[in-house]
Image (cartoon, rainbow over all chains, first blue to last red; front, side, top):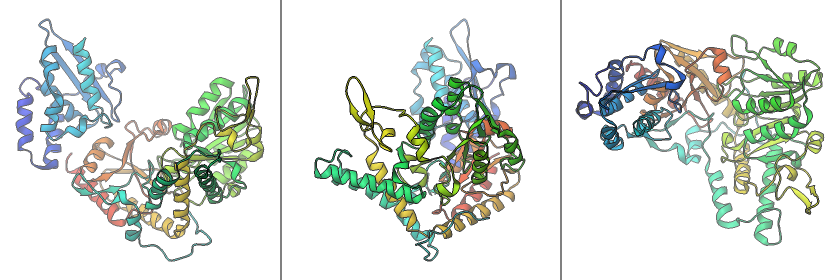
Length: 139
Length: 418
């Protein structure tokens, strides 16, 4: 288990980044967040869980419980990408499909001043992760 | 050793780089709050004003289709388009202009040879010799040829320094070798390969040779007759010209024997529904309306380059790379990938504990543009055991020592994050 979507939600992330002045502080926060996201055990780092379209390696594992709530697990070998994943998980983890669909990721990333990482032209694969989550909850 | 040589007619003084930079409008901008430090020249180079002017002038004042000169604009367009071909011919010292075929770039030039020569002249058991350093563009087309013809791909390995292992190349070459396809300069590591020697070795066993010149043209003086290669492929956008234009030089006897690989308009002599006779060289390989503006603007890039003291600029680039290597060696945890005998253009490195992509992101925030990853050379990265790829800084003559200092400072700043 990880704290994202549980003790660290998008509210905490917004507060964290509001207090972070300048790009250096923001990226230091991302790296700290990455440290709080546990690595995916090797048995889950499978081709089936791989997110393509990344310069780095990235994995996404999705589970839905009987009440319809999703648990997402992400990992990347690049730390900033992993921190960005934690930011996404803070917003989408522990939510139902309807809640995931209702969340505006663009507005959120714009507010955090990290919107450039959601661009389809970026090689970091963050957008691919978000799209994979959206496809998963769409069933 | 410092590669490159002066253009014989341009022995004027070493240019002032800060003045020269004003020719490149793209360089003068602020990125993420910092002056742009553009060190991704192996991916594409910036364009000097004369290239931008040539594109603009063509579309504003001339725009007409070529080789259909029944009106004044068409005649002007054709004249400028063919004049550009002659500029490129002279730039690489090809014997005649018709041996210079316009393509979209290096990839299309290699595909032309793969489909028109490889598919027709190779058969089961024939061997294609590549090198570990090759870009995917000089691997995948040959895999297609091998799959279709039953030919076999052999690969020249590297020495621990990152140079091609010539003794191994000697052993790999045999009468079964029909084609040698190697890069003159490695895009991923900046290694300059001894292509002249390799071509001679290939010729000695009766093999045809192709040189991928994508990374060479912007840095070295290229002479296809001195190299004695059968084919030479290059891209305009890596030599300060536009994207979507490049070329293939070919030995005349080979080009004449090769069938067209793309068909349509422009490349035909006469067409009826019963039969078609194909146009002469180079047009038989230039189906459809070509990238006229691109070719003319590439000609402008050649004019621009030949107007510079390229010997002095090559020395300047060399001093940038020396400063970069010295600076990188002083940063704890940095490992430079490849220590070749001769290097131009690029330095690849990795950093302990820092993923190349993370470093690139933190450098981008400081306005520094470079490339990370496998550099379209996955077999090379596998051979080097670099799963995460490398960070590559690649220079052009317009880069400055201040920019190298900014990169080194940027890397040191990035280290503080981890």
